[in-house]
Image (tube, rainbow, N blue to C red; front, top):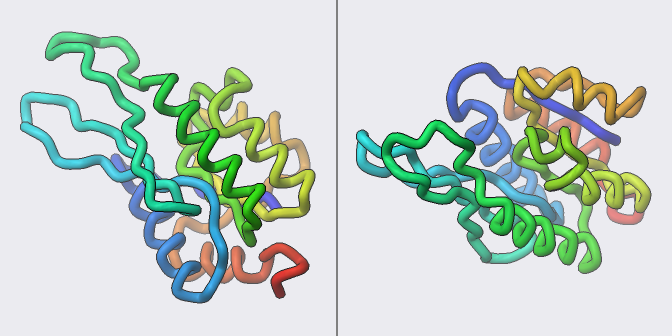
Length: 170
């Protein structure tokens, strides 16, 4: 009930997860979670990162502008935690599937979407996660034997999700 994809290329996982979520909604699944959309900005500036909350209409900016020459992480932890709160509320409202746009550094450190993943699994709600290649070892350690690798293909991932949907909504 914990499927994951690793997609190569900048933004590939974001596009894959977004396309899968759209297909699942078209198939009538109630989703909670988030997909990442990076609005286009000026070429000289780093793009913003926005999370579209799947159980509602909210869009949460999770990036912060640290200036042109900044080399630090531009993730806004407060924005991420706000998104996590909205996603958690979506679990309470009923969901067939939790979609997590990325298992990254925050999740590796026990924060971000990590508690929501555990909560969903404890409620028998299947989870789909995109994992950065650099976070894969930490994700597999966290997931233990629950993680099922999926080919990074919209049709394959969507089919897996449809087979895993929460038991009371089959």
